[in-house]
Amino acid sequence: MASDQVTLLDLWASPFGMRVRLALAEKGVKYEYSEQDLVNKSALLLQMNPVHKKIPVLVHNGKPVCESLIIVQYIDEAWKDKAPLLPSDPYQRAQSRFWADFVDKKIYDLGRKIWTEKGEDQEAAKKGFIDSLKLLEGELGDKPYFGGETIGYVDIALVPFYTWFYAYETTGNFNIEAECPKMIAYCKRCLQKETVSKSLEDPKKVYDFVVMLRKKFGLE
Amino acid sequence: MAEVKLLGAWGSPFSRRVEMALKLKGVEYEYIEEDLADKSPLLLKCNPIHKKVPVLLHNGKTIAESLVILEYIDETWKTNPIFPEDPYDKAMARFWAKFLDDTCMPAIWKIMWSKENQREKAIEEAIQHLKTLENELKDKKFFGGETIGLVDIVANFIGFWLGAVQEASGMELVNKENFPVLCRWIDEYVNCSVVKQNLPPRDELIAFLQPRFSASSWKY
Image (cartoon, rainbow over all chains, first blue to last red):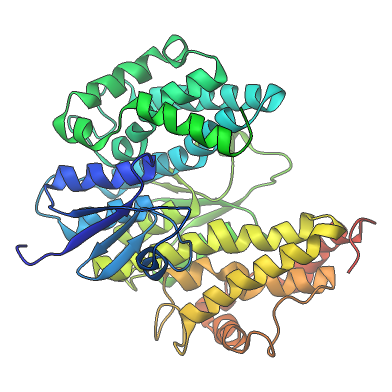
């Protein structure tokens, strides 16, 4: 709609923010990107997300929507005339929601432990992370994308974390491709799509960001 | 004839949510009680990823994770909608459901598992989240408005289990003085017929919870 005002409060390195950027790109929605400082949170961020004070926040015609997967579902429903992100069949939708929830429960937390923990805790996180990726590989099967022939909800939930894989591998001293070649092939396939390549950040830049965070938290 | 089965556990608020939704919509189903200490082959087959209840079986297909199941139920059986129609209102309902599950409930459980010197802080955090929840309720009869909706169903833990936990542990987190609005909602809620039919027997629940609090580490 020509009169739509869409703003995204975000942080460039956030995989959650990238999910929203990707969903908006798939739908061809024009929006204003607003980079947020999470150390000195803006009055706008605190007003738009008073409960969690986090990014991403999508502001659509003045009304805020928070929590990345909730935002992605909202985008799918508010701009329903183009590129459906969820299947139309209720059972297929339930499966998509289940696997996106699985990504939320496993990938972020285990990934975070890889770059923040040491020793046994880090090893356990690495194992859990690889096991989770293998389960996702099983779910993908022979399909080009989790959404089938086109990118869908689960792809949007997962593929932004690819930008953090290099950081996980380097801090965790392991090789994800060696353990999960299918997952890496899938991620590279996604990156061939323009909507994905323009929504995801450079993994080397993300790694520099992680190094900075590790120094800040006294982990280096 | 559609075949609906539910793998559940009598004391689980997650399992009871699904029952509430099915009963609200007049869906006939077969209930199968699971022993979570000795998980059945059926449960492990139907939910190999998380091995938890509830699991809904519909025409042989399985759906796990209570929030995913609730979305599926609302999309499949259209009587008495649980979710709002409007995409923004739907996003808000999803937000508060997630807040309950990911923020409120863990904060309350944290009190139960915290060491004595951390308990004060855990209680403060839980009270803060409950206040946030209460502010969302304001002067509405239910979170869903005039009738119960998704958030009310998901808040069954606050509506009923919290009272049982308080009685079993001797700790009072919520009372009419400090949470007048929330207590008013709790009264409406437990007297609502579809809710009343889907609560475990209070005495049995308290008896089940009590041993967890009689350990010497718990003093209140």
